[in-house]
Image (cartoon, rainbow, N blue to C red; front, side, top):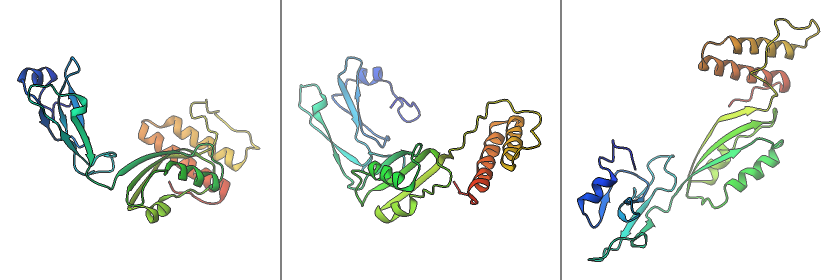
Length: 219
């Protein structure tokens, strides 16, 4: 809660104000405000419901017990759920899972404790074995109130060293895949900015998908 754009006061100013309790707002996640000596000065109650996929844990109301003449303490503040539906932001690393069965079991473990009425925001990352299909979005959409999958962090598990030196020429006996890798790595090294390098990197992965599996696996 240190962002001055939405919190136009400091701990020192709040202490100097002399309030018994400061009820402050704007932040969607609840939390107490403590002074320099650890004394509770006030709290954010939080929003009664989540307003975006980034607000996992939001959806609370705050009960405050105020006793005249007695300072606040942590036990004076009790947060309660106001929205039964919760947002779950889950991360799933697919690296090392070489078949669909293993990936499905890995996903089920990540979903433990999630209710059918909840909202799931699944962030998938890591290296996926080429040829193994993994698209959890349809399954999640059927099982939960709402589901969004971000798989932008997934790359096929090809052994490519983008920092290695690229030879000026290839052997005449080089395979089609070796020639393709070589040309794409040259383009990668020649790219003038990160956006161009990212584009070449994706093109390389998609091309290897096609060469190795006969399919292009969209990510």
